Amino acid sequence: MKQRYGMPPACILIRFSVLLLAAAITNVQAELSAEDVMQAVVGVESQVPADARTATILGTQRSGSGVVIGPDNLVLTIGYLVMESREVSVIDSKGTSIPAEVVAYHNESGFGLLRPEQSLNIAPLSLGDSSVLAAGDQVLVLSRANGRPVTPARVASRRAFAGSWEYLLENAIFTTPDHPVFGGAALVDPQGQLVGIGSLVVPDARTDGVPDTRGNMFVPVEELEGIFDDLVQTGRSSKPSRPWLGVYPGAFRGHLFVTRLADEGPAQQVDIQPDDIIVSVAGEPVTDMADYFRKVWAQGEAGVNIRLSILRQGKVHEVTIKSIDRYDWLKLNPSATVALL
Image (cartoon, rainbow, N blue to C red; front, side, top):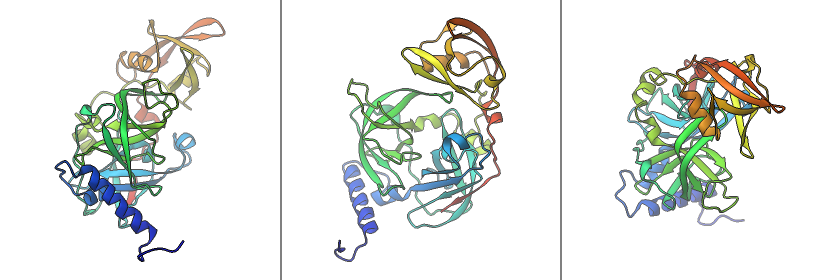
């Protein structure tokens, strides 16, 4: 097809995206222009060693987005993009390559922070208030990948989200429609402020009984409260680490099954097997995955013994797992070099 007006398709897409974003924030006093908001979202690509703990599940080449959030050029992204990485590339609107360091990976929230070695010359996005978002609210998803810089969306629901990797958000943000390149994408409110970072695609974003409502799960920016300074200064929170077992559970027909065990993790050292049903923690029955995680973490800090009751072939077995700090299991390299492109 012949191009019109001499404008290449990429320029048309970017210009349309700016107009779309501008229309969404025109009626509210935004701190930044639509173009500034778009430029604050950068792409992220990382290289992870083949022997990394997460290489089998997450791959050795990872890509997504990140958001400039601080005057010192801090880039906020979803942590799994840079976790255990040695090299990371981030693509900005100009294609400029700038080396940077991995500042932090925070297991509990799932966030990651990067810092370039020189200025990006990009105005940072301010953090909004995601706690006021409710089902039906209009938002925008901004991503630097897959040719979809700006995608209008709505909040589908707010609720707890539990991930089998021993992860729990009490008030996650679910949106529809789903964005195909969600990792590290920016969730922006009508004020042009950042309210969430993209984490997953889910089949059940809505909770109103409508089946097959694919959408995305975003980590609320409020998860940074109380830990941000620690992450910037030391790379992790100063709060005590939660006990980690290396058990990946899955819910099916009202039961919580062990789907797999982390290689060389604590649970692999005791008598617990895939397909075991988790019945209780320290004698307290578990009702679902979130309830299970809360009861494990309530036992104390990393290193505490966790007593589980499991059902196997019709018989209940008692197992005690000595928990560890997940950071000690991951092959993190805080001195790894990151390149921002």
